[in-house]
Structure formats: structure tokens, C-alpha cells
Amino acid sequence: MQSVLTDSLEKVLGDRPPRPAELIGGAHASGFLGERLSVQLAVRIDDASAPVPLRVQLRGALAARARVHAVRRVPVSTPAPPDPDAHYLVTAPGAYPDLLEPLAGDSTTVSPGRWEALWVDVLPMDEADAGDHALTLALVGEDDRPLAEHTVRLQVHPHRLPPLEITNTHWLHAESLSTYYDVEVFSERHWELIRACLASAREMDVNSVLTPTWTPPLDTAVDHRRPTVQLVGIREVDGAYSFDFTRLDRWLRMCRELGIVSLEIAHLFTQWGARATPAIRVDTPDGPEDRFGWHVPATSPTYRRLLEALIPALRAHLDAHWDGQVLWHLSDEPGEDHIEDYQAAREQVADLLEGAQIVDALSSLEFAEQGLVPTPIVASDHVGPFLDAGRRPWVYYCVSQNREVANRYIALPSVRNRVLGRQLFAFDAPGFLHWGYNFWWTQFSLAPLDPFEDTCAGGAFYGGDAFAVYPGPDGTPWPSIRHRVFAQAMADHRALTWLGELTDVPSAKALVDEGGTLTYSSFSYDVGEHLRARRAVDERILAALG
Image (tube, rainbow, N blue to C red; front, side, top):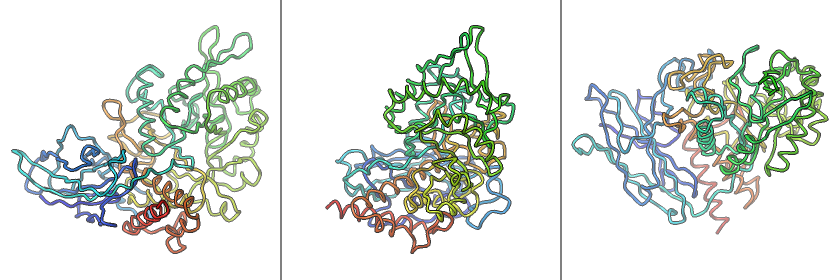
């Protein structure tokens, strides 16, 4: 057996030995209490014809805080665009490392003939966990035969990072959960699945959640309907609307218990132009009716009549039952050719949303300059004109941001995922949005899929764009490498923000501006540089705290 200890920013592709982990400040990984520290152990066995069983043994003061996952390859049919930039790790279809499968006890298997990896998370929680630690990581074969042993040097600082100050949202899709696990929407089992999924999102420092007040009109083909997931009960009798917020209140309690501080109300109009209404179900004396959807224009007087009753009632209820931020969406990703339609839709609700915070993902500065979107969320490859105009917008990326900028595709190096934290800090972005935390569908929601078998939404999106977690067999989401690395990006942002508060913001920014060359589309791919910069931030924090 060959084995190499490596860091969490390496992707062990299998065909070559990974980069060995660097000791930085005497540690392979370091951080604060409550911050997950991760390393990998890459192994290769050549003298076998079948998967080799192994047992993993951990020893040391932090062994009880450690959890081991097997890094599993997943099929990626569409890893990269036809004209990828030079930084993609792979561009051909294949099976690549992404899934972090929890070990059953201490046992796992390793496929022979290629480099495989184990992912080790250590989560220090108490003050007693602070200090310098040695974690022994040993691999044992059949008959207790020792195969490899490595010492992981860890350093835990005796403080906790402050909470993330920016808004971080990755849209949770409740209908993915009910469909994949084949459970009734908002049954007790569905609520358990939603809670587990949202709890896993919190591990990625997600602090805002898209709330299905009505079924979100996202990534749905024209004239097609997703499964209905509508928290707000809407009833009409003799022309008068009434509302039941019982399910919404349960959602609010769950969010509050998990530490969510921001709610996003489902979009009031359809995606890519705001031309139609979302799929909204109304209960009547004759039974439930799918009254709104693609068949009803955005400017319909019938829809306006509903909104005149619904929006004030919903706003009043949230004012009384929710202490956090409330964000309202009109339509997702309108383009310049949709300005008229977007404006018409906005006029439907402008008076009803007076004083509310409206945020929408878009890329055209024209929307902001016309005052149509007070808080634009801008694609990372279109931020330049906003910055030049003196604006500091939210940022998002998805499948279209596939050249040079940060993203989380399976085929990209992990540093391109993690760098986002320093970018958002350097450019004063108030928030970040990603559309797919657990979108387990083909494009346009035309058919459900098994994310263990299809990571590309039927081939439409680059591998990993549509989701960050996999559906574990017991209903607990299984993380991906990308999930863990994005959490590290947010920890970087929290550390930089704290340093800026303890000292001054320009000094904090100077530690990550890469000699003044850092932009959203230009950054270093040097993993050592990135890790050393984070170490320098931590050392400055500790010095400032005395």
C-alpha cells in the first residue's frame, strides 16, 4: 500500500499521487472552536483484483471529535463546457471524486489500481479541545494487519468565530425530498427530511432559506408543474380569501431552532421574464383548485385580487412571528429583453411590498439603474459594471459562470470553490446565492433522477451545479467535497470580518488581495498560498485578542 496525507483542497483523481499536506505554522489543519478541520488520506493498493476491506483507527485527544468518510466517485456526463478555461481538472466524461460516504463503523473498502481517499473531519467544540493536538490515523487490513499510519497535526484556537454576517442562501427544494423518498408532502416523514436537509445546509453556513409559501416557480418547463409544496393554506369562499399559516409557523419554528436568520419568500412570478404566475393551489367548497400557474398571466386582475389579500396578511403574520430578515423575490434571472414584463409584474405588487426588501438574481445593470430591483443579486461574471458604478451587490453563480470565476463544479479544483469567501469579503458583497442545494431533477423539473447516478441534471448542467448533497438512505443528506469546501470559504469570510472589526478592514483585505490582483475572475490557484493567507488572518486575530 502507498499512502499520502493531503489537505482538503486536493482532489484525488486516481491517476497520480496527490500533493502532500503542508505543515503551516506546525499544523496540517488549524482553526477555531466550532470550525470543522479537514484532511484527507490518499491510499493506493495495486496487488489486488477486488476491493480491499480496511478498518480505520483514530487515536488522540480529538479522536472522539473526528469522523471519517470514504471519498466516492460519481458519474459526471458533462464535466465542463466545450471551451473550458485552462484550470479545469478534467474535461472528459467519467467518474470523479465528490461524494463523502459515512463509514459504517470503522470499516470501508478501497478499489485497487488507483488512488482513493478517506476524508477526515474534526469538529472541536469545547474549550478543552483548544491547543496543539496529534491525531493518529491508522489503516488496518484483514487479520489486524497494519497497513499505514499517519500523524495529523491539528491546532485549535481557544475562541469561536463570530456568526457569518452576510446572507448565504442555497435554495432548498422540498419537493426533491418528497419525490426522492416517495413520501407525502408535509407528512411527518417529509418534515423530518426537510429538517435534516436544512440542518446539513447550516453546516455549510447557510443562514437564509427559500421558503415555499407557495410552490417556487423555478426551473419548471412552461405548462409543466412541479409537485405542490405550499406552506400557506389559501381558501376562497364566496369571493373572499382566508389563509392558514399553521404549516408556515412550523417552518418558522424549525428555522429558528436551526439558526436560520433570514427567510426568502417564494417568487411571486415565473422565472426568466416574470410573464406568468406561480403554481398556487386554492381550496374551495368544491375541493382544491390549481388556480394559478403558467396559464395565468402575471398581470391578471384575478391574481392581483389574491395578492391584495395574501401579501398584507403574510407580512403581518411574519411581523408578529419572525424576528429575522425577510426577503421577497419577484422573478429569477430576468434579462434585458424582459425589462417591460418585469416592470409590469412589479407594478402588480409595488404598493403591497412598500418597505419590503426585494432581491432578485439578474445580470443587467439596467434593472438597478431604473430602480426596478433595489437589491440586485449579480452573476459573478457580470459584477464588473456594478462595481464600476459604485455598487456592492450580492453575488451568485450557476451553470453559466463556467469560465475563470469561482464555482463548485466537480471538475474544478477545490480552491476555485473556496476562494469565494475572500472575494465576497474583498468586494463588500452583502450576500451570496446559489440556486441548487438539493435539486434532484432533470432540467426544467421534467423528471426526477437519482443523484448518485446523474450529477448533471440529465446532461444539461455541469456536474455538481444542481446540488451539494446526496440523499442518504436513512434520510440524512450525505455531503460532498464541495459542501465541505464551501463551508471553509464561509469560515474564511467570518475570520476576515472578525479581523476587520478587531483591527481595520483595509489591513484584513490586504492579507487576501494577492498583491492587488484579486478580482472575481482573477485569483491564485496556489493552494499553499491560500492556506498560508488564512493562517496569517488567524494569527492576527489571536494577536489582537491578546
